[in-house]
Image 1 (cartoon, rainbow, N blue to C red):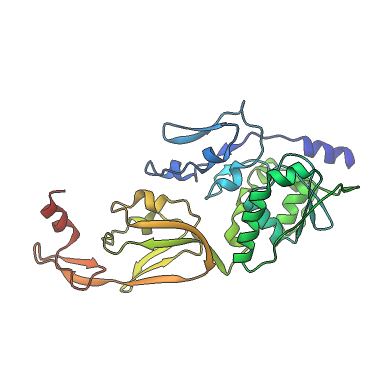
Image 2 (image 1 turned 120 degrees about the vertical axis):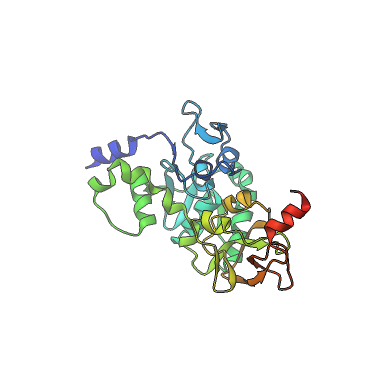
Amino acid sequence: MALLNKWVESLDYEYEILSSCTRHRSHHSNCVNCVDACEKQAISIKNGKPVIEDSKCIQCGDCMPACPVQAIAGILPQRKIKENRLIISDDQFPTTTELLILHHKGIRSIVFEDESFAQKWKQRMEQVNEMLMDLEESPFSVSIGSVEDEEFYSRRALFSLWKKESKSLMKQMTPAKWRFNQQALNLRQYYLDYQFTKLTIDTDKCTLCPVCERICEQKCFAIQDGQFTISAQNCSSCHLCADICPEKAITIEEKITKIKSIQHTVYENKCQTCHQPFRTLHKQETTCPICMKIGDGS
């Protein structure tokens, strides 16, 4: 069994960009999160889509949690954990997303075995602790010192920790199971009472076209029953709705708040120019968006 475990840990897979990437879904997408997250510049945009250059990729895993729609498949680096403490003994440090998930799973303390590592990641630690305060959770405690007899959470064990279920080793060895663990990086499934994004609509610009409603896979927008409802609970902050909105009426801000839906009243008016019915967010509006654009010469 020990030999088998070592063989499993030696398995290596190249990272892969999935078709769920917003740039694969629409040429309007301007997302560059994975590019910005890669310090080795192994990811670039070619023909409008992100491409991973395998020769440069060191499989640090930073791109995986950076993707807002979990569209990068790969294997996260193993972490050292002992008695609910995360041990940092090298220059690799989890992203804020991974830290928030580890905190949810019961990790409360971070031990840096070298003070230089603590200094290097001080800003990230402050950032994640501020986020935990917004989530009404206790912050990580931080200490410096060596830890003997570390207990390693292997890739297999870490996935088991995240999935909260026990599976056989042979099932864990299945390549597909290993590659597609990126869905575990969806923060919203761990903090159900909070939303990580603030969505705002400029009612002076919005024409109630259904583009945002149709493009959003998380169903954050709904135009029905005389209401335009905006629910940011499931928003991944992929920005595709803002990128594709023809009126540029959508603003997205990454902010942690309690779940709250916003509703705008939708009025059914009749255009005085073309005499056709149209929907609007303004009760006194008398010209439909099409006639208004014709009148502006646009």
